[in-house]
Image (cartoon, rainbow, N blue to C red; front, side):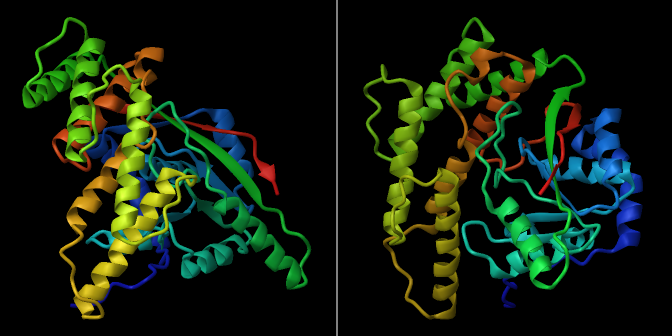
Length: 365
């Protein structure tokens, strides 16, 4: 069995990119049920930076965000490069992603090959590089997670490299981009159907109002997961946010202990997840190569499932829907619950959506 490479570099094929940009709006609408919407002011800001060195930093509320950024590149008639998770390149579409300008990064590690590639791209005069600074998908249309600092740090390193080579301090523009989704059509029937399916699977009696139905489903799921990890859930008066935080802490500490990793309770949960997943990968490779003996004291599949849960519910909190009960917030939460209950990584789109893109003021570093 061939060993997977440690790094997947970009292999940009301009002809393929132009062809894909021509068909992408139709494919995105039919398959992903997405249509790009960007105002003239935002578009003109990017047009003004066409021949500049640009680092594009979008938020990451959904799996379809890279598609939205590719649609944006097509609207501009340009090619972008994209920093993407290493795992995306390990299936049949990996070579295609490389051909449209994407390259890999191993999250949770100091990925030297990926860092070197990023620095190389950011020293090119007209490079447009897309990095999602949240480091992963939030799964919430109205939430932005704390940014990882790596993207801007690498931009400064690239500038410093140019200066050390005897060049003047280069212009390098950082451009924040907002992606926000809105459904085309009324979604009340879709919400009802999703609630009914979850209620039937979990054996929950139907409540009077949709929000009460959602809370009953969430309570059942939270209790089941607590029981699965032997966490006492008898005190139902505790605030949900406290229960969620305690559950995450217990799961992460247990997995770190099983893998003999130093526990890091003050780091963001997402960073701890990536470190655990990398440790699983290393340990599995060592066992397959005979470097270490397999152990019955750890369950790779259970740890992976646990990390999936942490990422799925990373930014969830009680009150997200109640604060503004839009169809988008309802379906954000229902989709997460469906991912947990039905073990579906990529649930089908709930309806056609407009991806509203707005460009913030650029900053010349």
